[in-house]
Structures are given as structure tokens and as C-alpha cells.
Length: 143
Image (cartoon, rainbow, N blue to C red; front, side, top):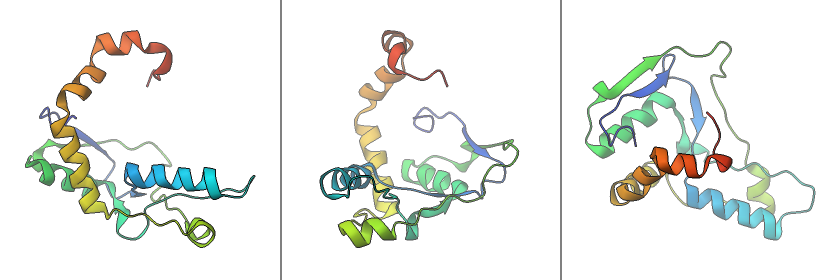
């Protein structure tokens, strides 16, 4: 939403911290599969893997490109001490036991997500409003 409003996007440190990205529909389908077919008491890691393990700065650059926004919106900010350089999930177990795999490739999923935010601007602007936050304070974190 910050990029849509032409506001700066913070990137921590050098932006090379790698994260595992997952489309919301893939996350929901994995949670559903675990709930309906997983073994009670087991832990199943859910992640995008493969082309979805990307440095944060590449994700921000791809987001800006999808929106047709300039990379000058990127603002590098101090990273917290000891911040993990890479988060990655081993999703072999959920694949092996539940035959779950993400269906969305990262780039296509990002484009779908960007399109949703562009088409639903009224919704997210309302959610970001002070009035909404005040009326839902009980459910929202203070971060």
C-alpha cells in the first residue's frame, strides 16, 4: 500500500536477507491440507521454496516494477543486530505426506497480489484508516 501511495519502502540493511515467500492461496491450501489430512500432533512446514526464496530487495524491486513505480522509493534503513540473513523452510514432509506443493510461482503470484490491491483500493484504505483502527483496536497489534 505504501508504494501505491508513492511512499518510501523501507529495506533493512543491505536488502540481501533472503526470505521464503508464499502466495496467500497456497498458504490457505496448505493449512487446509494439514487440518484435514495431517497426522495429529505432527508439525508441517509451509513455504514457497525454489524461486520463492529471494533477497528482500529483489522482492521490493519486483513489486515496484509491477506497479510501474521508481526504485527511488526504496529507502535503506538500519537492520537490527543479529538479524537472520536467511529464513528457509524445509517443506519435504508436507510434500511427501500430504502431496502439497505451492501452485503459484513467485512472480505471477506477486502480479496477482498487486492487481488485487490496485482493484480493491477502497477496501485497504478503509482498513488503514484511523477510524477502522480505533473501532478494531482489540483485534489489532500495537506494532
